Length: 320
Ligand code: FES
Image (cartoon, rainbow, N blue to C red; front, side, top):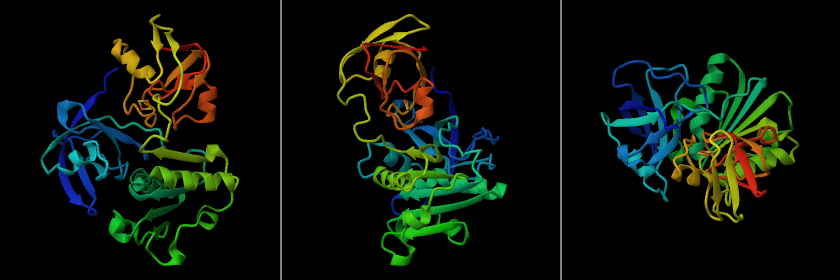
């Protein structure tokens, strides 16, 4: 199931910080871009046909249909993706996927508590735009190393719903889970995005304070450590219910890689257990979940990520 690619043109580009570039993408035909909901991301074909695909959140207002806004941090350990994005100039073409969303706003919550660490501000900024437009009750906490490392300050600074926390700032503005997250509230949803260590810190503090796991929505840019098919796990067989194919998955192999190598038309994108594009249903067998996106309820409903997860049982039957 190949990705449907959309051609765009870089209409504006500016350096928000020394390491964050902001790119505005428009349609070459000057038509509206496909609709998206706050929290969505797009896959980006960074170097054209060479197939370097990266995921970036849409951080502009969701009601703005003439342009998509991305903000990209130059990763020090970049495998080429973020640096390729930083090289883009106004007028350059960029192919992106249709927006995808595994990090949407809760429809059940009355209040929304957004917690961003560094470049994790991107999906949460789109959420803040949407919540602002709908008049919903929300608070956004943006934690960054310093003012110089923070993007979008001019649009965030004077908004009474937004609190800025700088690591090098005075003590009284530091992010404190006890007061900034506070005690559990059944009507509030928490949304967390940022570097892995920051997210783990916020999520464990909220859980320790008694928040329900289902109230905490998260989006990671990198997989949790060891949550990969390369981590230990013995050989098992994957059986595909629709095609009838059977494939042996050896230690160190991912189910998705084996399926793709055998020309199975399976959906996928990030291949790291963080985007949700490859999710399929398990029909039989015992899954060994290693993703960081499925909720306990989704796992109980049989959902499974073949790019990152494995099997505890000798045979795993998938709805493919
Ligand atoms: S391809 Fe992204 S979670 Fe599997």
